Image (cartoon, rainbow, N blue to C red; front, side, top):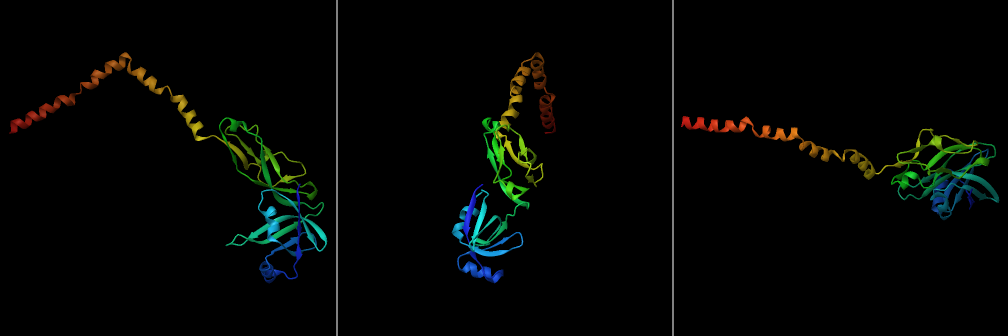
Length: 235
């Protein structure tokens, strides 16, 4: 697992006033909690790009006052207008102390359904897990190779270590192979492709040929002259 090192500057004041002063110095106010000690510090915005703006999960090493604190990024707050990083929370990793964290799902392999013209739909990008820091992983791999058209892989289908517990509902879909409209339409049309030919064949049968003259000899056409004759008598 990748470990990212960040050099931090301690903050002497906390709260809204201290955070506001930190932002004026073009620094991001941060807090590290977990265990018996809470630390307030700041980080340079440019140092955070490869930590925040990436789907990868990383362990962070905060270097503060000559001491390295091993932790994970727990929460990021953004400015409502500018979307700049406003505040960050870090959680200290303590041996034999379980943590809950979201890690990304990595989709690997070329599904059978894709080779047949289907499309892979990724329904979940992250999964929430509970584990000890020593068993922490940076991703869960979903092998899509055996997925056929119309199939779905769910949380319960993910293969992980028995040291890790997935907290999401086991029936939640993670990925599926969608059947394109063109393939669905082809399947619907194929069974009825012989219908026009069957109708044409039925029209050439003796029964069909005998029915045509009966429809042509409709009594309504003979009644029309009688109405016109009545009008001439009145005149």
